[in-house]
Each structure stands twice: as C-alpha cells, then as structure tokens.
Image (cartoon, rainbow over all chains, first blue to last red):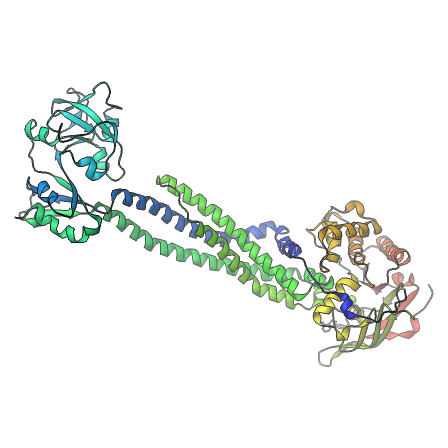
Length: 405
Length: 231
Ligand SMILES: Nc1ncnc2c1ncn2[C@@H]1O[C@H](COP(=O)(O)OP(=O)(O)O)[C@@H](O)[C@H]1O
Ligand SMILES: [Mg+2]
C-alpha cells in the first residue's frame, strides 16, 4: 500500500505494559514452577513465622500477666514473719495488723492465720485432701479483692461463730457447690457451717485451696494462737515507695528484721523481664532467617534469569523495555517473599495459638506484627530481586533470542 | 513509489575480536510491502545477525536500517521497543513459547507491550489462531502440542499485531519435512490472503526453492546473482 505520509517515529507511540499485566507476568513465573516457588519461599516463611511466634507468645503471655497485674494491683504488699536471730520461726506481734492499719497511706489490711489442721466433709473422714484452714478478721475479701460465688462472707459480725467460707478449689474437693441446704464441714473435729463459697482468684491459689473461718472463733473456741501468719496490706498506689520501708518497723517495732515484706506482683514483673531477653534473642534469630531467606531468593532468581534467557529475549522482541523486564523479576521476587511471609504468618499464628492454648493464655498477636511481617517480606523480596532483575534487563536481546547453547 | 517495509543501506555489523569478525559486510536490501522472500546461506554466513539487525534486536556498526521509512538509527532504545511492539513480528526456530501459559495467552503476548487490554488481546489472539488453524487449541498449553502446532502458535503470535514485517529465523529448522511444508504453506497463505510481508531465513535450499524471491548471504555479504530466481 502506498503511503504518502512522511515516516513519523512519534506515531509509534510507546512500549507500555499495563499494571495488571505487570503483575500477571511477574506472578506467571511462580505458577510455572510451584515446587521451586514453595521451597524458595521457605526461608522467608521460617523467618517470619519465628518472629510472629516470638512476638505472639510474648504478647499473649504479657497480655495475661498485665491483666493479672492489673487485677492484683501492684499496691498489694504481704507481710510475713521471717526468722528470728536464732534461726527459728519468728512470729508477728498480735498488734501488727492494727498497727499497720493505722499507717496513713495504708488503705486496707487483712490478717490471716494458717491453722495446722485438716478440714473434711464430716468428722468421720480422714482422707488427705491438700486443703488448709485460714482465719480472717473479716477484711480479707476487700483487701485481696475476692468475690463471693455463693452465700456470704466472714465479717465482723459472724467471725466468732462456727461458720466457714470455702475457696473455689476447696469447695470442689469437698463437693459443696452452693450454700443452700446448710452444708457443713468438719474442722478439728468440730462441725462448722458453710455460709459462702469464693470465686477462684488467679493470683491467690493458696486462698482457693483454703477454708476460711473467723479469727475470733479460731482463737476462742479452737484455741489458736492469735498471732497472724500473714498480713496483706493495700497501700495507696501513689505512696508505695515511701510506705514499703515503714512496714517492717510498724508491724514489729522491737525486731523489724524478723519481718518479711514482699510484693506478689514483683514475681510477675520479673517474669516479663526474662521474657524480654529471650524475645530479643529469638527475634535476632528470626532476622537471620529472613536474611538467609532473602539471599536464597536472590540466588534462585539469578538461576531463574539464566534459565529464562530466551523468554527474556522473546519479550524484548515483542517490544518489552528493559524496565518491563526489570519490574517482572522484581515483582516475581517480591511475590515469592510475600508468599513466604503469608505462610510464615499463618504458621506463626498457628504456633502462637497452640502454645497459648497449652498455657491457658488468651491469644494476643499485635496487628502491627502481622502487617510488619508482610511488609518486611515484601521489602526483602523486592531487594533480593534487584540484582537478578538488573541482570535480566541487561541481557542483550539479540543474544537472548539465539537458541541456548 | 511506496515505502518499503524495510530497507538496509550499506549495513555493517562487526563483532569485536582478533581480527574483528564482519558478520554483515556492506549489506543493501529492500523488501517491499506484501513481499515474501527467503534469505539463504550456509551456517555462519551471517543470516541470524542479519535478522537481528533487521529486527532492531541488534544495532548495525554502521549503515542504516529503515522500517516503514523510519530510520532506526535515530530512535532511542525506548522507541525501538515501541517499534518492535507495533511493526515487527518474530518467528524463531525453537518457537520460544511460554510453556505454562495457554496457547491463547502466548499469542496475546504479541500485543501485551502495546498496552492493549486483555479482552481485546484475547479477541485478536483468537482471530490470529483462526488464521493458523488452531482456534480449537486456544486453551491448551504448549506441552500438549506437536512441533508443527507450536510453530503455528508462534506464527499467530507474530501476526497478531499485524506488523509491517515478519522475520522468521529457520522456522522449519526443528520440524520434519511434511510439517515444514505445512508451515511454509501457512506463511505463503498469510502473505497471499493477509498481505503479510515475510522474510524467511533458512539454510534449507528446499525451503528456499519455494519462494519467488531469494537472497543469498555468504560471509556476511549479499550475493546478487541468486536473487530473483524463479522456482
Ligand atoms: N555474539 C557474537 N559474537 C561474536 N561473533 C558472533 C556473534 N554472533 C555471531 N557471530 C559470528 O558471526 C558470524 C555470523 O553468525 P550468524 O549470524 O549466527 O550466522 P548464521 O545465522 O548464518 O549461522 C559467525 O561467524 C558467528 O561466529
Ligand atoms: Mg542462524
């Protein structure tokens, strides 16, 4: 056909690859080699999985710890007798509880005395059940923030009477599910009426396993020494630091060294600190796995570029620009790593869930950890793809279309 | 006078070496629109180099290559890509199909770097497949095809963009003689019915003998004697 128009290079338009086609060509290389794709993605998967698991487990454990800390309150202190100068068990003065209650920054006090006797369903039973007997002045519930599941509690009005309140585990072992019908238990050979059952308290397993009776009843009827074996003190939260050093002297002014003051929440806090070190170590290991995974992707991609020389040559012959070839391989590498990231997140979440369930924790994985995992994988993949992609784009098209030798 | 599909003027391509190899030596060649011709010559004579230079996959060391009147010397790398996407179609000896892509997608890839949307690509690819008689294998993947069918798919990919020039480098080199004849017949048909301009590079004299026009290459030079010989 005759053309009268002068030859015009601008009429050629430009070589152009739509975004959808960029993605399609980038992903096409992965579908064609599924086994290799999976194996190559494995390194990233392991790296991301370990990081998600570490973050997930630590966060799940901490979620529970923090909730427990919150519940317990970091302002609860426990005062116990230590050892005397001669190495035998010291005692708290009987006045200790009252003295402690008089400190201005102390909100609540509750003294308990552990009684060395067992508790049974009836006076005929004598099978060991691991339960212990505690006394309460009536302030125990408020100070330890215990809740009543059924019935009512020991208070100032009934603490001289033969009545008892059961911890949750104690109630279960004694097979008493509620207080209706006036159930009784036998303590030191005496029948005592169960007037209440406590809810389980995750931070006071010792209370869960106890039967609580009135302090007056224990001292007057059972003849128990009036000295407390432990006193719980709830301190005004803002005044913990200045109050704590005063407590030993207040409880026992004559021999303050025979008093131990502890804070139950400290043990939990120490636990989170141990976690932190372990977490950093594991995160570093995860990082190394990611790095190795990235290098693995770069490696396989270089091999893939060499194997696909003729495909690259063909695409150049079909009009692909260097940039189209480059983006194809960068997208392929990024997709490979993202696949690894997704697999890693899947297995990381699964591992976290399994572990958290085995520990009776609520699963808590921060969303940032998941998003971060995918983004990290994407960036690592794209970076790993840079070199192979540049290699692919640099191939001489005339060379690349020649039959491979 | 109509613009030739391609014109080579005094084209030289030397490969560096001691001494440098002149793979193409002062080549002049003109192919008019609607022509079909054979470029023949023994192995190592420079046929593939000629095809690459004609197809802008390789730039000449000196001389001019005009495609549809456009001097490729003046074009940037990017413009050359646009030119290949629109004006040139390639058929290779070893087909160069994507094994994991369906036949129709392989053919449609002939349009992908023009930025044409997928639906239009597929419509046009199907039409091209009809022209090569493989419309019924559109959804098949290359591993299920015979050699002859594969080369037909590659031809469909080359014609799908309706290029000004189709360059085929030893298109029957991997095929038996019966299949070769079929593929050549297909190229002739496309030339006759679609007006496609086709240059077939071959060292097979049997193949060359069926072409109206033959150009001989020897040691990088076009030999004028054998051109325009009737079969
Ligand atoms: N990339 C290259 N580097 C150096 N020499 C080359 C290269 N490609 C081809 N040649 C040489 O150029 C000549 C022509 O080669 P080629 O065009 O492939 O011939 P044909 O296709 O006719 O067999 C041969 O001598 C070959 O060795
Ligand atoms: Mg050759």
